[in-house]
Image (cartoon, rainbow, N blue to C red; front, side, top):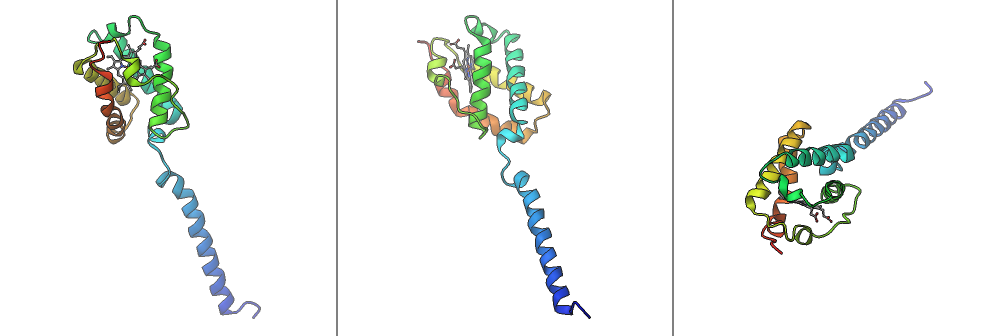
Length: 152
Ligand code: HEM
């Protein structure tokens, strides 16, 4: 016999190892390296969430007026960039600090909660899982104190 039992066993062990390693390689990017940015749907997902949030906000009588003197397109672009940055996407936020950009708007917690509510609606519209929604909101929540109470 050309190939003995030992060679057959070695071959089986080798092929099993290859199968396990290649299996791990196809599994690992989704299992371990998936960022919150990916979970939100990457650039397309984050863009839709931000656009939806701003659409709801601009027709929300509680807070629409706060954007009266603002360049909404600029806010949209920078909010997409900021969320991308904060959720480990391939971006670096280039806008002003939260304290600086909300100075003079005289926002309070009601305004803040209204915006969060609109973002939740936008995420729901885009089928973002509840757990993922909460992960993004948990990142934004600590900004509350920089955003509100900035009267000048
Ligand atoms: C965690 C919550 C918030 C985040 C992450 C956020 C993020 C941002 C960003 C990235 C900008 C653009 C900064 C720049 O121009 O360089 C911005 C501007 C602005 N935000 Fe927010 N924001 C938040 C809460 C709010 C709330 C609650 C309101 C009002 C209800 C609001 C109203 C505005 C307005 C009106 C501007 C434009 C200001 C201007 O024209 O100079 N934001 N925000």
